[in-house]
Length: 183
Image (spheres, rainbow, N blue to C red):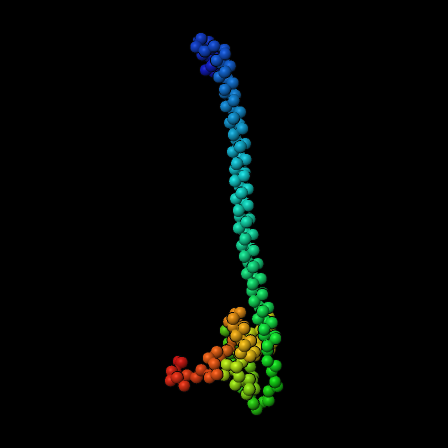
């Protein structure tokens, strides 16, 4: 089977020099085509590599944001725990006949109670004391009574740790004094 160049050469339409030039040009085109294929493959590999790098950067940024968030929560818990441990009121032994049971709700919506002396109950009622949650505390050590300034410090850090605090001042908030029924 003859190709077109051979046919043109036989017919006398092109000479040998033109034929060699056409063959040379064709070989150059093939080389460029072969060279272009690796360049395209390399460009595709580079694009995939950059996409993987972007995904890795996004994952790293998400992990770093999560670590920063966890670090911030831990720091907040430590600050609250320090204030609670430092300012917690030492609770006195309560006698059976002077028992005030004080109910409050924890963050998980469970209702707890403390048996208080009359002085502790009055302090809570008039806003001189507050019941706060101790981060990491378990059982009887989970909640503490602190004075007003410590409750204000904890409130500024995170008010979710303050479980009961009458912030209205020296008078308790009694609905019958205002004439409005809370129900």
